Length: 528
Ligand code: ANZ
Picture 1 (tube, helix red, strand yellow):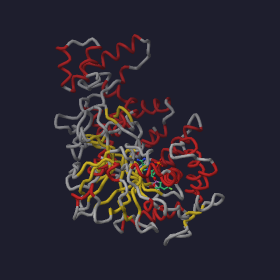
Picture 2: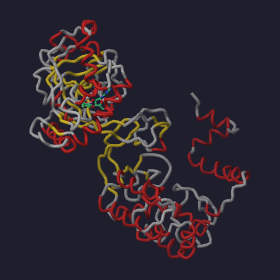
Picture 3: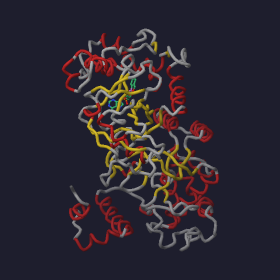
Picture 4: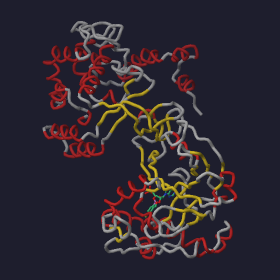
């Protein structure tokens, strides 16, 4: 492991001086002049008068960002509430892209957790939980297929835990999934799970379960060797009619007596269970996984390459063209039925919604992130009206390549709520709630525009400690308020005084549309 201290030493800084970096401000004073010298020695041509620090160490920039956020707040673009966010338990705050060592761009993935109730009397391995309602909770992206469940998969070598949730019920999942749930208000103490039992998958084989919607009265836990420990809950519900993985694995257990014997699985737990037709896919039929596995001659659950082909054939077509054959939503397209069935199961208490990072996210401090429900200020980028405004602005923007324009449009489509507050770090405090800081990607959305006038305000003094050519009218005083006493003032001053110059510069940068938007105080981020 390389410590920060080692990195600082490798830069040629002695131990005595390294200590000074415990004060975050020291970073701001130490590195900028060195970076400038390095860039100069590379021959980079830079207008150094436009250099500035982007934290509250620089009152000009600080008031610029406070102005921006006050404007957004006034226009009701910033809201407060509990939101799902990628979160570091170690740091106790959301982990944004630039905080991450791995997992840049990774967001939360929602799963439906299917509550598969362990039939009483509880099996021996769970006997200490007698008196509780115990559930194996399976993470699925396909709630509409629950009519076709034939069994539940567990990996014999994975470790699971049993833990209580707020409702008094007991859930069984991997520790990793339980931690995510604990940060999503599942457990009585936020972020904490109380472990009632540690269980290896093999101890849970052949357990009888009652699962929602399936036509089988009782289904059983069976071994699957391809379950991933770092995905979902490690508990997987099996729908062999529509999931090639499930069909291949069920066939394995049905064909291989030795496999059943190894895990104490009796014939009754497996042999009577057949894939149930629940979804018709035009051109493939009503047992799409069976058809696909046959067509690609999938030999077993480990036949990865053929399974991939089988899944490719069924999944996409299933989603867009599949039609449900059973239940109250029979006749509806899968696309439409998915949400309805999910909603029905959540309302009846048979399922709960759960989220986890789409892929592994680790912070720079080495922590594995979870998805947490946290109270935070967030930018409501998903708001349709706001998106429409930006689409309209975009129509007037001439991008050099068509591709750039398309990228903006695609981004607009997926952009949604974006956490913009954090608990610690360097930056600008949220003007109306200074116990939070503005997250440093959120405050960088329109900061490029500051370059156009930075030299007028600061004249190249990076922390703004001496007034620039415009005088010090827009500087904040010690209390953090501008001298004019109005948080809007700095930018008005900035625009009023700098307008002629900045317009030229915006033209130069072909960013006129952006500038127009700033003057109106409208959303800019999507144009960046
Ligand atoms: C029922 C079902 C029916 C599923 C169906 C798929 C198709 P992707 O799309 O790759 O994210 N799953 C869940 N957790 C798993 C784990 N830890 N290891 C292996 N498989 C796991 O896969 C999501 C699907 O993978 C989930 O949806 C689950 O199977 C399975 F026709 O549930 B599905």
